[in-house]
Image (tube, rainbow, N blue to C red; front, side, top):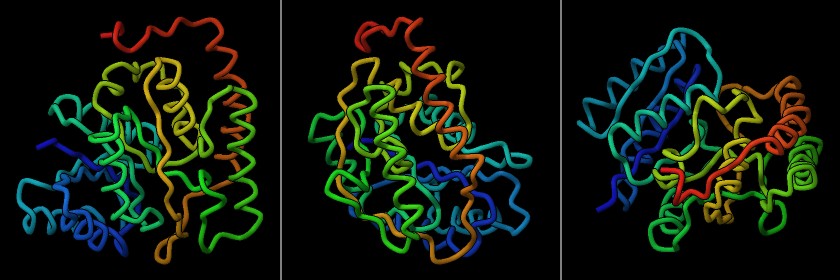
Length: 248
């Protein structure tokens, strides 16, 4: 059986973390969970410790001092996953905007469908977003079109934060060369995987805005994405990407 690790970065997610943890633990495919908590003052980590006792050996916790950014949390998680030889590694939000049941579809796309990276895509079949204001839907949708135009990345939902990687993708992409830690981090990881020639597929999901807790989205995050994409494309013109089968 494959070893699966779901990485969830958290900051003040006490309303959601127990429910999301139990939901992942009770899926028909066996997943392990790595919570990376950035010093949440609301006691998120204490709830995770309770869960660890309940689901012994399947829930892991890394605590960091203060908010260090989404990208650095995932990179820390990727290092953990590679060190512990997980086959498939997942990125997921704590707030139920990603339906835990869709983890199974991402797993199937990689384990049985031959994908190296599977993206839970909001835009592969129209626009599947629930409870977002129209302005934000449009901003997100056109951000993905903008990324496609600037970079050539053939992905409809380039800003998606719900995905599965085969470990080989994380072993090939040099974490020290990842420059973004916010929203653009998601774009940069997909862009790098594509440039290395990995097989990327989009799996349709329905994205639902969080019901509990507060969103971490800000205008600065979008700014990073807009200017970061140009910067990323320009840098890529001066860099050689080894085909992934040679990059080992």
